[in-house]
Amino acid sequence: MEIMEEAPLAARGVEVVLPEDVLAEILRRLPPHSLAALRCVCMDWRSTIDSRRLLRADLLPLSLAGIFIDFWGLRFPDFFSRLPPTPISGVFDFFPLEEGPDIMDHCNGLFLLFSLLVVNPATQRWACLPPLPSHSTKLDFWFLYNQGLIVFDPIVSPHYEVFMIPFVNPGQYYIERTDLVLKESEWPPSPLILHVFSSAAERWEERSFVREGDSAGTVAYAQRQCHLDKRGNFYWHGALYVNSYFLMRISISNGSYQVIHLPIEVYKSRPYVYFGKSEKGVYLASPTIDGRLSIWVLDESCGQFKWVLEHQNNLKPLLLGLNRSKQVYGPWILRDINYHLYSQKFPGEWNLYNQNYDPSHFHSPNDEAPAENNFEWHSDDDDIVDNQCNSEERNSGDYLTFLGFHPN
Image (cartoon, rainbow, N blue to C red; front, side, top):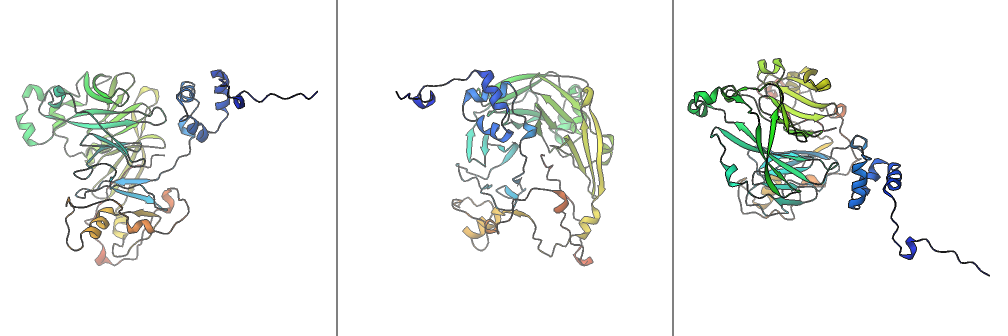
C-alpha cells in the first residue's frame, strides 16, 4: 500500500502563525538590510522588530546620495551628487506649485516648506499640513517669530512631527520698542510652550517643555545676537537641536530642554555658526571671514555638555590657490536646473522668477554625464585644488560658506 505524504500546511492554504518569540529568534539571525526590508512587510513584523529592538540603525549600510543646495535668489534647490546621476531633482514638478519651493527645514530626506507642505523628493510624495490653530498664529509677544522644524526618523517610525520654535526678533526696531521689564525677562522661558504637528494624529497640539539648568540670558541679550547665523537645526537620538546664538537641546520624550552655550572662542571671533550631526554625534563648525575654520564636537557624557576642539585650520591658502578660470571635472555633479531649465524654455534674456514655464520632462545636460563606478564620499579624494594660477586671477575677497557635515 502506497503511503501519501501530506503537503505542508502553508501549501494546503492553512495559515501558520508563529509564536512571537519564535519569530523574533528567526528575525534576529538576519542581516540588518534584510531586517529593514522585512520591517516594511506588515504591522506584526514591524511591531516584533521594534519592540525587541532587533534592528540597530548603526549597523545599516550608510551612504550619501547627494546634497541639496538651496541657493539664495534662485527659484529651485539643486541636487549636488556623485556620479552616476540620480533621478532626484529640486524642480518639484510632482505637485502644484505657484512659486518655487521655499524650504524652511529638512530632516532625513523630508523637506518642510514655508507653505506648510512636507515633501519627499526621492519618492515624490507630499502632504499639506493643516493651518496653525487661530490662537497660535499671533504670538503672545510681538517681538517673536516662529520657525518650523521637522523631525523624522524612518528607523523609529514612518511618521514625522513639525515643531514651531519661537525666536527673538533681532534688530534696532524691536530693541527700541521692547518694554524694559520684558527686556530683562529670561530667555528661553520655562516652561516653553511649543505647537507641534503629528502626522500620526494629523493635528496640531500644544506641548510644554521645562528647562533643566540655567537660561541663555535675557530677552535684551538675545536681541543683540543677530550677528550669529542661525543655521544647522537637526534631530539626533531623540532630541531636537536648535541653533539660536546658543544650542537648545529639546528632549522630545520627557518634555524638557537644556541650553548649551557655545565655546567662548566662538563668541569672541563672531563667525558664522553651523551645527550638524556626523560620526561622533553633535558638531559645530565656525568658519570666520578671514578663512579660519574650527570644528568642535559636543561631549554629552555624564550628563554634562562640553565642547571639544576637533580640528582647526586656515583655509586662506586654499582660496588663494583656486583657479576659477579653469573648469574642474570631479566626481561630484551639479544638475544646475535653474540655468538649464530657463535657458531651454526662454532663449535669450530670461527672468529666474518667470512663472510661465512647464517644468515637466525637463532634463539637465548634466544628467548625460558618463556613468562611473558607485563612488562613496571621502574627503581625501575630493580636495580638488589647482595651484597653477596667475596672481591676476586670485581674488582675496573670496570667502567660504559651510554647506554641512557628512551625516555618517
